[in-house]
Length: 385
Ligand code: SF4
Image (cartoon, rainbow, N blue to C red):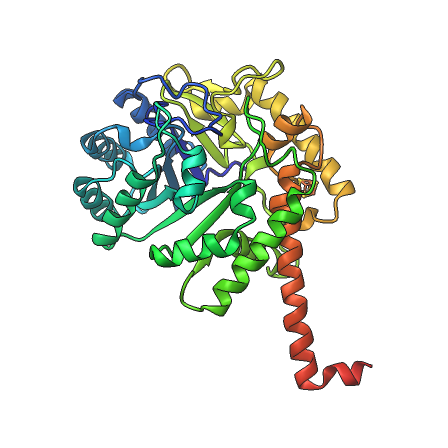
């Protein structure tokens, strides 16, 4: 049974900046998605029978705020006219923050949009990689955007891409977020995706460096309680480990259409959102159909989808047979397997070592310490001994 949980829409591939680690191939293109394309997408999604009570919509894969607020007002109107009664839609924007203005803040508030801002920590880390098109740092303008969000009282989280340098400085990173009033943080380790080869992933001990970083960052957050309220990696790992008995791990990235992505031309791809716009000899541009020339429900039998799904399933099956983390991972991220191993039909990547294995290790070690303390104080340790 197909179930769409997340729609990723590329309103435009254009990005106003040029980060050193960006893998998006068309970030200079100023194409904008047509109203007809949006209308076709949502008509087909709502008629598919593949959505339950709600769906999340993320506007991304380019800088969404390069388009005017009016573009989104119109887009949201179109979606609202098509939305079946009772179906909830939660919109989200992932932005570099540089173009946030009072008008954007009013729109975010009015539409209750989830806002994520990309900031890589203090200026000396952020400005190494997050650059304007003429090579200048973007830190000051990003922070000005964050200050506006705070002034308007708009809740937001940040996504920080960790470099080897920032990973070696957990205290500095922690002090930065606390001093700037940033309370919800998500960490990405610079990945190899598309044509981009990660500096981090060429270092064999990067998983240990990430473990040390997260360990110290989490420790500081607990020590200064009330400072950081959400660390995505820790929260997700806890959710993966602590779940009702008998509930199998669900990995939406290996289920066709659970994450459905549309580029600005109406091309649909699925599995990892980062596949959108990449190229591969076996899978072409990863497109499985176009909403302007066909219907979403027919794309389930697209030969390219079947090819990808078969290979991704084979990779998941190999993970199931060989990896002790499978029950809390579900077979990883197809895009990283392809970028690092050259094939979906594979298992371990640097990405999963870092973001899955070490994070799970960290949370399991913490649970064990809590267990020991609890068992010790209740005397159960003695009885067992
Ligand atoms: S941690 Fe890596 S090897 Fe293990 S199941 Fe996940 S993707 Fe596969």
